[in-house]
Image 1 (tube, rainbow, N blue to C red):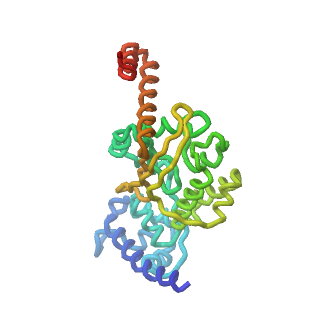
Image 2: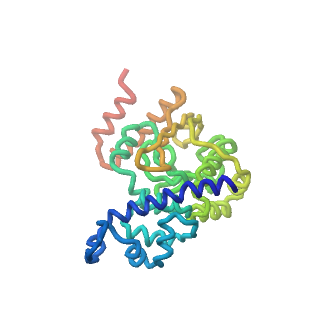
Image 3: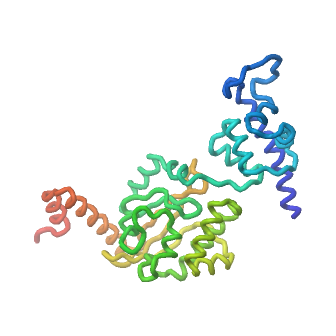
Length: 306
């Protein structure tokens, strides 16, 4: 309790300074108001922010002074719109005010720009994916889709890896050592949950997955916590057999709580099998395009004449 009070006391001055700074940069002209006379600052007055946000002047003044008052998400959203906060600033406001922040999943998906997508594609034939802290799948490369988007496993359009792994029938689960790997993933999820407890998107996800998967519900009740890190995992694939791969997580600048996870072959056999998956993909693409010459060229490469 003392630690919580101390943390709140440290955040309130920062909240006050942040609001004053954001208010100072928004001019009356920005919000369609006349400049008026005797204005000491180029920014908005407190009463103008309160009026535009639909809140009481006293309440907003206390908020900007860092007083210990309660704020709802709806009110903070109104203030954020008035002060023209962008997404990182809005999230910062929520954290300083100690209100659970609910990110827009569509915004997160759109944030995976061409630079990151280009890196994913360049890693082929190593499977690579962009996850957020809830294991939502934000972007993948073709090699990742080769390994996981097969009948019975992850399919195109699946938005969350954890949801699929816990709801797919066990014989179809791509994880070979399911009983040892899934607890680690749930523990990693819980380490991120601490920053999002109370947020509707997170609470709905935990509740709904617990309802459809008693296994997940049991692991979640266990309360274990882990951080993402390198691990050797074994996957099964209907076309090439087992794949033993080391997963490595890399953070992405400008995408908080998102990471690129790259799966590297852990042995020569797996290296050959991932290359084989890439060849199968290319043959399939050539077949779909009707390129007989290209198919023959690949066949000759795979089966050179004696």
